[in-house]
Length: 188
Image (cartoon, rainbow, N blue to C red; front, side):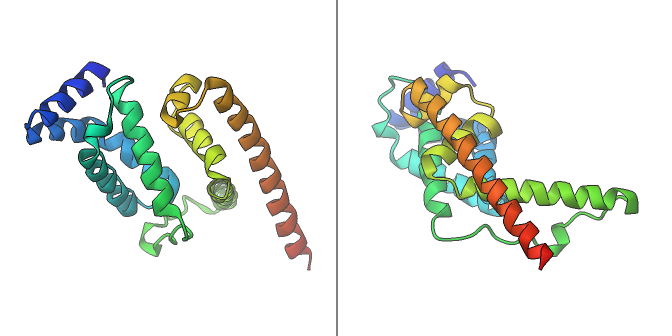
């Protein structure tokens, strides 16, 4: 996924070879769908968001200055599209036909606890302020290093480190409060 291949594809598209954009889509579709899925947890919706990302990227290709990696610019566009897509709505419910069958009675309790923990973490991450949520998603879920996250978010490395630290603290606090509320509800 070299920067040079992305740069060449962009140059070809800007020169009028619209088919060269297919190379960009082929190269980046999977990571962009993965990023969108981290926000919405729905494969169909993630694919729609990715389609919107590529449409916006195509329309805004002239705004990429070529100073950094094309992928950095593309992920910044993707983050903006994901943020807009997630405004004003809760993640959709999981359809019953997509719920996996439990492996066995012994594993059922452990699976339910694990699924509930994963759901609680996902919802808590989505409720974080965007600057903390984006840093956490890029760093932990997309395995970007701190310098790459800084490039995507257009902030200094120190800011990313601070956002990760503060995001983890906010996340920890939200999860502890949510767990306390659940315990209180179960006790009554």
